[in-house]
Length: 440
Image 1 (tube, one colour):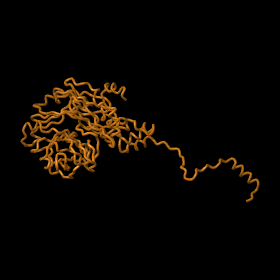
Image 2 (cartoon, helix red, strand yellow):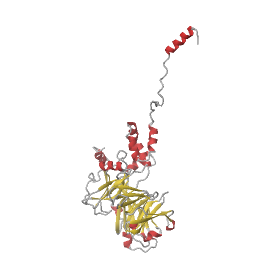
Image 3 (cartoon, rainbow, N blue to C red):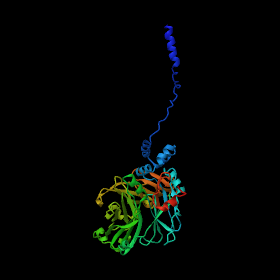
């Protein structure tokens, strides 16, 4: 249509001074947008909700900013508090002089990659630990929270040497002998044992940091008149008397001989904050219990079925909701064809045991003596047409059987975080600085 020439000239001038319209992308082409940086606070919350430590390792390898967030010590403490360390394998020793062998988790186990990295980084020969003065070698007594308890071979709790070490970070602390005033409390001793006490939970960041490097060692002695225990704390570097009960109070009128009192409870197991000792004596069976929160001894009655079973056929296990469970092995067709009866204790007395289920994991299973980890039963499988031989974990809730190690193993389970997510579990003053040089 027609307009005045002036108007056209004015509009044309305006158009000449305006920027050209943006070019639209061709149909179906993606828009390119600059990504906004994600705040570190939000990254931390996202990473805390990753399901496994292996997922966090993969996330940290994605970029420098992710790795910076994951490497923060405060974040790692929060992550480790929310996520239990994965099972990496088992450590075994055929004899005190044969050394130690680490059996790592193998594919397709989810911890196989971390186990392989730990096998290369850790020193499971304990060459960084000084040799004992009273013996020619160390004997492994316990593994817990990434720490190893070694004692001098051939020596009991009262006369032996002890060291707690971290083979992944090559740190150790020599545990001092029990002082004379505490040793004088032990009269007519029988058997003794030494083990690590599980750590608690730090309520704040400073407490959590201290908790990660602090530990407790317990020494327990079965005496003629009583049972007595002592605890060493790495925080105070001192021993103290802990729980003690007389046999008269514990047995409550039961007529047990001296031999039964001193040599009966040999198989220590741990469930929900309590240690359990299954007696190697089927008559008038009582389970010895030590509550690590109150540091008190007590006796618990097993279900009636357990009173006719060998101590090798009884395993304490986590039944869920903080309730202890008991798994009793029976023999159906032969020595390697087992059935397991799972009981759950809803109170404390024998009448509170409730039978939950009867399971038969697989033909050809050899039960690893008194083996459980949380809700998992540890099984050695001899192999058959459907399963390879090796060490397996059975989830008693889902009945899922998962292969961990390629070989049949009798030893201590070792759980820890991948090297990139782990921190030293032992603080040993000047000693640790020397050991960390050249290994960080």
